[in-house]
Image 1 (cartoon, rainbow, N blue to C red):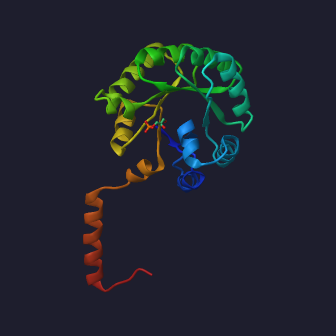
Image 2: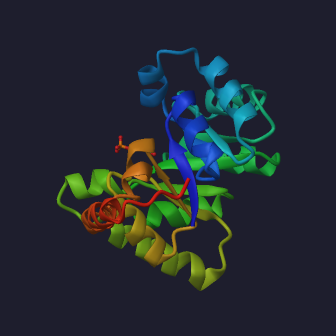
Length: 217
Ligand code: G3P
């Protein structure tokens, strides 16, 4: 499973990128707002920093303006994935922009039918939002599994990009189901390294090591 990092925080991206943990980056209007930076400036900077796809989201709701915005953000780097919402106009924009050879990430997906439509419209990525479904007492992971089945049944090449990831558990569950990509906030990726038994075991080893009176260096 590829890891995208869901942030517009360039320092956090750089830290994970050095470790080989970043196969791409996703952003959205809320993350741009959180960064406090100009969208074009920050997206161009991120696109320079990483090799993989960098999703930049359009904000128009009508097809024509969405396509224009898509063209504009695509100029920010040669690895830009244009993000459009899963609305009828968004699907039309997806068809147009993917037909022109752009990577397109169709976002705000909450049903298997929406994912089927995005694949038919030529999406490079479909972004089902796991956490927001869980928030409503629904099963976000079940959606990932349904989309996996449907895409595999028909050989759709659209990649499942598990989004709205909130916990390390979401990451491992998405990987078990076979999501192609998961995008997570940097803190969730870092939390994946933690285990209380690792901490406990390390403390015990260090205790015993101290008793030996030895040093490696
Ligand atoms: O990738 C979409 C993601 O940013 C949404 O996450 O936590 O706001 O539902 P969240």
